[in-house]
Length: 175
Image (cartoon, rainbow, N blue to C red; front, side, top):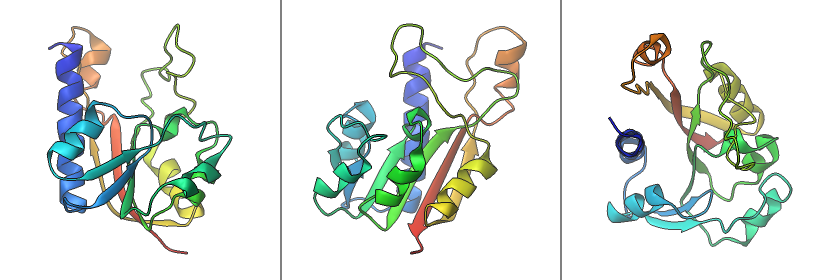
């Protein structure tokens, strides 16, 4: 299976989770620059606005400049931040849908060899992400995990069929 097919499969799983927890027709602030998943969200009926490349580590308050939204999505972006806590506190909505990669005991954290922005500062265990959200003022109301098989030959690819790689949460602000 090609890398593009694996990404498409992950996007479909993410959209399925999103549809389960938030109805279409809602205004969404999707953290990160516009991408294929943003377009797919629009194609199924969400009204999507993306952030415009601000450094969300250094300026989480920049989120206040975005239009009023029904909920925020953070699909595989929080692991790239040095400190996601201030950003989670500054989100301009009362509902959040987020996915993060889970830490795998048999693999090192992801790091692109040439792109300094494409690396993970964090890969969470589910309890760590739960604690981060709780301390930032969020209550998880739904969660799911899923695997990310690579269809390559080897011991680690085999383990990826059984160990969850992604963690998805739907949370509401409790403060």
